[in-house]
Length: 223
Image 1 (cartoon, rainbow, N blue to C red):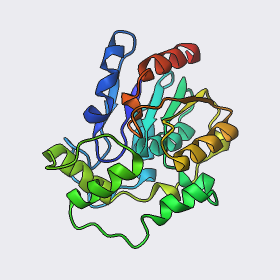
Image 2 (cartoon, rainbow, N blue to C red):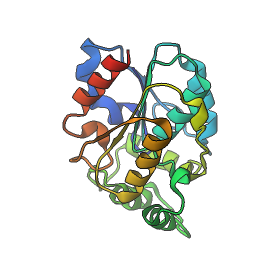
Image 3 (cartoon, rainbow, N blue to C red):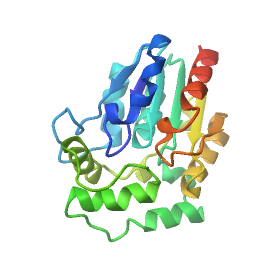
């Protein structure tokens, strides 16, 4: 199981709830460039990270991407034949659902905004996506993660190659924001994917009650 984290939180912060699955699956935590313990980056691009990820994937892998990492995973899976499955948790591929009022409102919230410090960015971003992470003094890893998120290319610019994604796909959402719901609806429709809704943790889907059971069941059936 290859696990790709989203924005702000690194691999360990995102995927620690899945550690109990280590007795059933080999867990590979992928740390995206710019996130600790890797060195900071001046610019992060989902296309470049998808190419890096695709180079590491092997036939038979189960790829699981959360948030921005879900966009990276969608692009990497399209480049990688032979994957056993793909799971994405609320990927912010808003470009697939342009015109939806909730999506347009979400994107408009970023227009004209600048952030001087990681604290400013986290105070804006986490409530927007419904992530339940306490605010306040930022630990060093979260501070670097916030700086990384501040230089990420907008995931709304991603062009998802639906025609190249011919594998079992699970789309997971948290029933907390209609913009993410709209993207998930399009992915399910275009990919013939399975859809599961797990409320209770906002955008922090891996922390939602029942997530491990849902994921393990899907991966077992996809195998």
